Length: 113
Length: 305
Image (cartoon, rainbow over all chains, first blue to last red; front, top):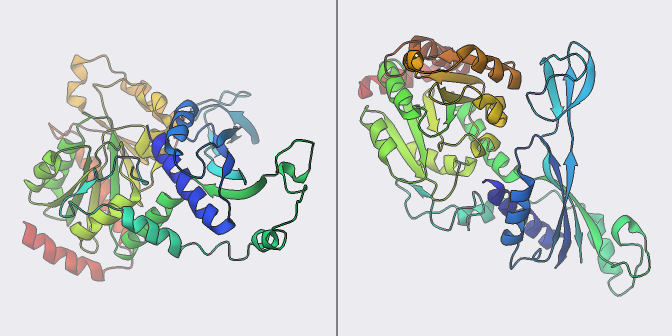
């Protein structure tokens, strides 16, 4: 349910950038969202349309780059990909993993006019 | 709508600040920090080409027939950066003042408030304590805390599902905890959203009761990953339930191998001494080299007892 707040945060950043970089219309918002960021993509998409109403991003399309999560497996001493925080290493089955990425949650780029 | 938490306007209520809503401040803060793009060359470039038709500014800086002439603006900003800024300010405030701040998170009904009132009753004779209570509605919890003789501020989030760092900043103005004290933040009962919002606390404390499922750490991994300590509460009820403690601990460690796990019953007091010891030790660590703060602290404790 915090996706609504996240969209408010996105709008805040867009409005600040619109003033700084002189654009009046946002056509596309490109986000990086890691699989471990705790964000439900469908809820984010739903909230996005509602929150952007009446703003410079009213008609903007939302593109989401899904970022995979990587973890360092201590027994194997190498980087592996995980889907959830509690996944074991797919090679050795250990839970001794240090998750190194996958919690990204940021605005990457805007396509503007 | 509130830009901080998504609640409808005017729904956040901080006791003693009833009609002050953070919106005004949001904008002030935003603009005072906007220095990072003063070296933006893109913008001066745009002006000089204002009346030209430039086909190289489209997405990917190339042109194909019919492709729109919109441009790409690189942002690279964390969506939660606003909250994180406030959280950093709070964290600095807590550190400067030698305060240990604990953010208590759990599902509704895990016994957070009972755990807190028991803790306060046991520790208020030796530590200076204060509480920030977060709930959607009512001041019931803050009143329960005040009944123990410790000061508490209630934040009502309205439709919001979590506390954010800005609400804490506002609550601290009212609460004004003393140097070297322990500040408890009781978050809104929710195992999902509060995980994403840093409040500037020293530790998140996740409370799980044995009347819930033992697989909660797997169902809500973000929260158990974000927490430094998990308190398994209501263990006095274990004989009547099919709750597998070992499995629960194993699940929590899968998500977060570093998590400290304590088994307690806030009602009977079983295991609570371990929790108190953890609080005492964590506070001691915050006060290394800050012995001056202990004096103010002891005076305050004498008043409250």
